[in-house]
Image (cartoon, rainbow, N blue to C red; front, side):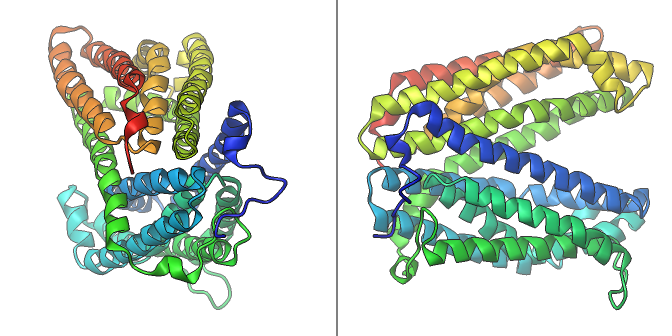
Length: 454
């Protein structure tokens, strides 16, 4: 048997729904917090090199983020396939699906590393970077792309374990990787003993080294059978039909994330038309919203795994209850977060920027948009639950319709007729959160996802 849960860790389909949500969501939330902490520490050390280094790393990171829609799609297909097979106790299929995903991740990472080395600096030039920023950011981007195979394997390996119901192992591995990165950053950036100072390149080398060791540790766990997913040698036989099933499920997920990424850039451009103060206010407020959205993504990931496993176990109604339970938990969190933000919006903005106009505009953004993030719980958690069931097309359609059919045109129009124009943009965002959440809930309640075969 490839799947053999430890006696002390009952299958997710055999424990209570709330227990399953807690077991899955908490480690993922902690892992996300650690990841954000690592990025702050990277910024701290790179910041010692000056503003040019920070700008180079920031622009390099923006280019790297363009790779994530494809990676997220592969992750979505992996979770859906592994979770469904695990719930049905089709152990060989769960292991084979994970192996096919890892093979594709490795190939994709190697291709990107090989193809991205030469045009790295040209990509930064397209973004309008200054020559000194291109020099610093180009080296950082080249090294990061060269080592992208490590992050691809790490990301997809974590997704496979998540689908099997194991989120603790990825959390421990990511925690160890983050600690290692924190230690390596100053060593490679500034040098020590025989290690020469590498500057901005050192930050990329430190990240690649820590990710490589984490990916190796993850593969050891998958190979040795101590975890919930055991990838024996037969699993690594290339199976084109199984690989295509994973990709077919994941393609709409990639489209959904890509549409969000592009929309974010467009909204930033619309906000930029209102002046530098508006950009600073929006960028500052967005930091807080990214923080309060983290539980939604963790609970959404838990809902995806539980939905897939319950469907695999032939328990569609329990899958529905699990998705709504995770959604309800996040809605409560969103209400509490909105109450705090409404009461302390100016003070929160002032933590990052005390310019009076930035504080005023940023506080307006937080107070207009935050209360409606309760609907974002519907949009995010139920969307992930649908993806866990293998229904990835309709979440993509709903996302594209609401973002590009409502938010972008409404933001452009309201910014022209409203005073101040930023208030019109914030209202468009709030209206989109409501619409997207209600549409996602309505589609989820049709129950068509229960009949999808993966």
